[in-house]
Length: 264
Ligand code: COA
Image (cartoon, rainbow, N blue to C red; front, side, top):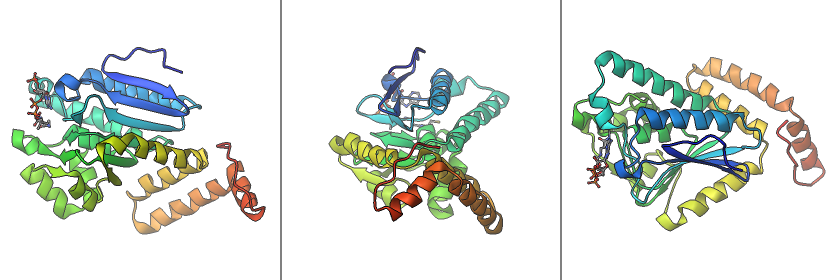
């Protein structure tokens, strides 16, 4: 199945329960302009609403880049007020990604810089090619990240390394990104697709509704203090137990068979 809507700046394909979104401006290393971000937002909303879709993969077109960040030409045109407004709009999209009930995997094939890293960090998994390069280079342009980079990088790698990356603007390679737990896994470039396919296979074998509950518990809980977060976990635990899939999973264990989940 292919989506009816035509996108000009992304490729969007839905196949075998997976929606694949490819940032598609390879001539500018998939730099994020408003038109591309609008396409991306619409595709994400479509993927979330489509009951056939169980997982989303985001990647970049071409050999060279996942995404080299915000479109610098477009940025130069913005007034300070417009820039703040734009930043808030992008926060809306990245926050939406975290609120989506379906897992999102960033398949990082090359440069993953600035806004590219910010979008990758809003995904649930980051699988990187050995060739991938990461960084928040905004300081080199005398600006700062506006798509969540100062906050999500700090939450993912800790204050020490985040401050270093943000203030020096230096790039790190995939191995270093792995050491910092910025990515889940690093694989040779020719194994990137199969690695992501393996991960998707694992995710598709689980209960879709329960995956959604985990995502929500983690992403909301991390913003609460521990007492509140544990309270929230207890509520999520109750919700998980109330699903048909949980009945099936628990029974299947006792009957020594594999659970068959319907996402209900
Ligand atoms: N916005 C707009 N255009 C961009 C871009 C961006 N963020 N990143 C790359 N491009 C364009 C380049 O201008 C160039 O266009 P051209 O062929 O019309 O000249 C094309 O993409 C290829 O990039 P180029 O710089 O020639 O490739 P490279 O291999 O020499 O360098 C990078 C690759 C990623 C290191 C370099 O492009 C770069 O530093 N990009 C900006 C990264 C950044 O600062 N991001 C944060 C933005 S807020």
